[in-house]
Image (cartoon, rainbow, N blue to C red; front, side):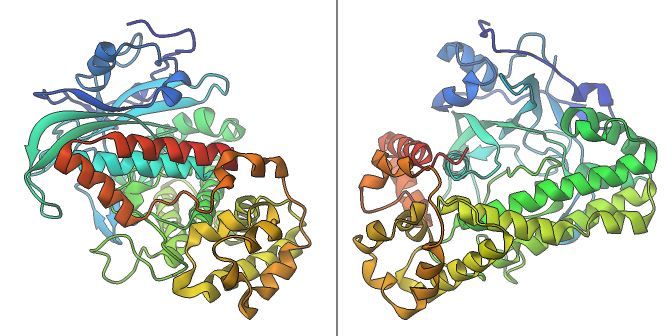
Length: 473
């Protein structure tokens, strides 16, 4: 297989041993049609040189990559699902396929799957993924990456030619297998499983595995100090992630402990939504009847999950020290939210007090806009604090209302950050890129009804163009 010089295999997780995973075989699919191939992501790990036939061999048949894992590994974990503990979890329709180094940064990255077949953790499920679910995940990861949110990247989507039956969409429906590139597949639930079985030895082995690979600043610590240090570090990255979701107007939908990893990277997109407009009670999942994971409750949900992670570490460290390690979550989250909103507005920070005041006016202005003002157009109009541009746009009448006066006054004191970004073609038009529910449904309808993939491809290209305009990375 002709990988490029940027390819560096480094299969590390297999060394943890069989308590952490089960070797599995991928499903044998009747068809293999490439529907999305992320060569931009592939170039970062030296796999962009694969032919389509080699791509299918790797990401539909899951033939081992050079010098990488000999076989796929379904990872073991538990988790709280809507705050009910479930010890029957694990990779039920996915596995860890390979681990490799990112060109330039040297980060260890994982190639994991979704819809790749049954495993010991599938229970009564079929281990498959609907094509619609795969299309939705591509769009989510592309949009979040463009918006500067830490996220897995959809690496490959291949249609597999099976008919699937689901209770939440018209059936039979088309099937697919998805591969994602992520920083790590180690979840909060990985810790929960070993704590459930009272295995401090396995928790210690897990932390010793994590520290040098993902938190090298902790590598020299020992015992309880390392456990406490890891919790504090994971909390800091999780606070950053939650803040970026909020600035992006993103609702994950299913913030269970098995859907959070130890690197503060978002992944596994099911019933997600982007906000149409400011609404703290907005939910993404139709089955979230109490609003547990609503937009406004996401930071609290992340913190609750962190407390469950802390609970697993009481086998290794004093509970008082672990509680103290979480004390900084709230201030770190608020700091990260200020930074994220200032970034989204394309401004240069003026320090904590000014940024805090600006943040308050931003959310007040979004609320004042009500049904008439959508989330994304607000940030589009006011990018780099350009009042003249906002006041010449299609939403100018909204911004002339008294409710916007405090925001306009506050933003006037800020300098633009890299104002040359406004010369990008993305900002020449009157409307921003959004990813709302109705548009996703319309894109899927084109595929379902006429096998027309052009609008989907155009949308991915448009999101990437918006990302180039924002230049948040």
